[in-house]
Length: 437
Image (cartoon, rainbow, N blue to C red; front, side):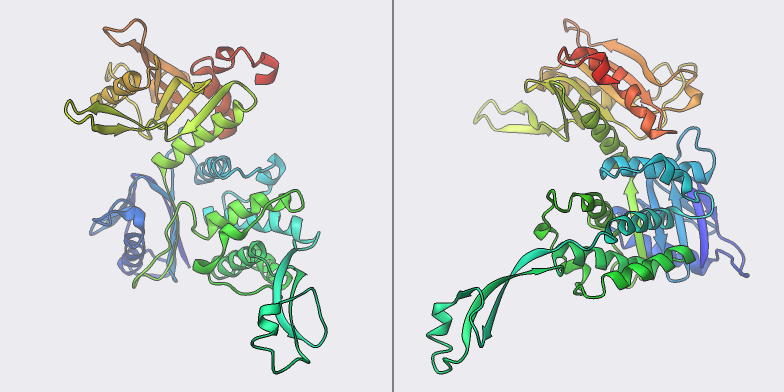
């Protein structure tokens, strides 16, 4: 198996034929697999751009694997100079988005340098699944219908006196039976089965094989036929909630689309604009839980214009993140996954004029006087993470648009930075400093 890693926007050279070389043949297989994904766009180049002597990664990160090679695309995160550090930061962001609690001890046990993103996620899945399986598989009552010699449960009178009228020695029974062959266990078995085909790490393969034995009596259900909506998480199986989120990620039900057509392979891909937005939004939701402030992602939705005749609303707006108090927007945040320019090179820091116009529209439509354009931090800005500069919108009493950054080198430390963007803890009188800590 040929493995290569590259950062977003960087180039990966195509090598001359030889043992373990990433040749044109391997590159074409990776490109074909990438082009089969929905994230690839109409031209197929939103993930990888194919040049004669090299491939160039775009703003989509994750893993693309064929039968003979794999390409890992990692995000450019300031301070994460090594591939291991970039993987760690990316996994922390994913964990925040899918609500996966990863203990510090477990993170230090992972071999960030030797394994790629897929093997790291497989190991996390195996660790968590082993923890809950040894307590026994969850079970639920399932309704059965059968024709038996003795009554069990309730009699199905309609069936008994129609189809079984000529065979009174058989009774049409309806009964509930406690079973482990339920949707939740079928999803876990499907994940184990799929990961066993994908994993190349011997330790992961060994543990997945052991887990396969634990689910031997569970029905094999194809991934497209899995009944996600039938899963019920309650106090009896709460320990499986995070596993379900991780299985959903690995089975391609959230961020990715598996390869199709003639492209044979696997992908686990994340568009960084979307991941950054969800990471910021979810982090704020958790940090402000229990306060009077509420955080909403991708909303509310309203229109900028209204036709004079007919009153039809036109040109919808939908902010990335909105913080409200008592239903009223008090802060609007739009996230942008791009590197800002330093003030010396560009007094506007490279902020797009269209982005400013968009924020002004948000201020008007949602009657909000505090707005933030949020970017990832990098050291070339020669400033600390946080608010880089603020501007008052001319013609208003005090509507302000701020340009701010957040450091993602250690994503768990990003929450204090986010709360300081608008003194969110102080802005809510129902939240004390002790609660904020």
